[in-house]
Image 1: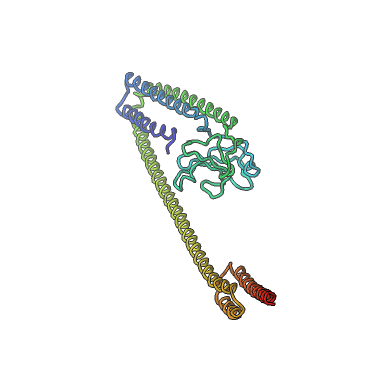
Image 2 (image 1 turned 30 degrees about the vertical axis):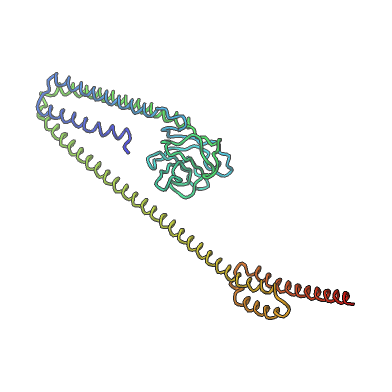
Length: 379
């Protein structure tokens, strides 16, 4: 993305080249009359006015007020508040703009914390809506994060509404504001730069006037010599312009290569994450199927044992021994297959034998009492 200064330089290069070419052609053609010099001075004044207008537009763009809930295009910001015991000590402090990520500015804390950088950046929806928003972390796009803001529309960092930690509640004390010291320093630097530019323009205008006077005074006497020098200067200028154009094209090609490499890396990372998610999902499905199968096998084995347990509970004295033998055989065959239910099933087997013996004993006692009652009635 080209900034204002790059656009201005691209605009000025053809204008300056055209003016210098016209001047060289006039000098090569011979003595320039006063009307031509006046027209040349007028063109230079128009170019200076255009330069001043574009500088004013740049300054207006820099001081444009942001929306109320955003920090705006500020180079120096301050993070304050944050009640979290660990995260607060990490994120609080002064930050300076570092670059951009996914079309929005990134910031870096002026000091490291525990040997780690503290950066704030924006991540778009390429990895899903849950990853979209503004983040605090040691590096852009890293797995470790400290705070999060879910806004996908904020073009600059939001002042409030930050979640600490990233999956926690909104911390109302967490506030981002403009670093006034950094802004004042930036304004002072801008004023100094503007003064230097004005001084340079005045010096250039004075130098041009001196050159014009010297040119008028020496034109006739040194016309041939000046034509040769101007021809050499014109050729040198053409060579420099060609070299600049080649350097610009080389830079553009390098940027395209870097962008393509970045896209390849992002695509590879996305593919890796997708494959990892698919592998984990298949492993989970396989594990659940195995657990379900094992549970079914355990239930089936327990059911086989419990059928015999029920028969033992209802056994009579003459069938108890046989049913106990059957219970021992089924336990030897199926008990180990009961898995997590083995202890409970084994306890049921033990209790059922005791219950059967108790029932038989009660039946004997009842039979004796019944015989005694009948004997009393007969006697």
